[in-house]
Length: 63
Image 1 (cartoon, rainbow, N blue to C red):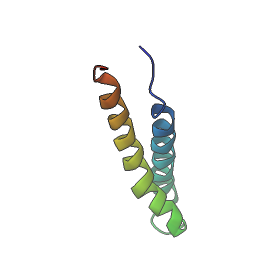
Image 2: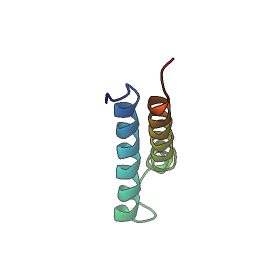
Image 3: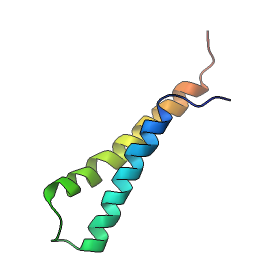
């Protein structure tokens, strides 16, 4: 079973998003710039969606 080429970027995007979310909780509501909020809201779901797409695409039988 080989891994898809999309999986490493998906894991990286998700990890960056989770790190941004953790930073939001650690720093509190007012201590971080707006781009950290954007990273938390956009990167984690994008990485999750890309990972799910990669797994679904890899599980389909080849023609």
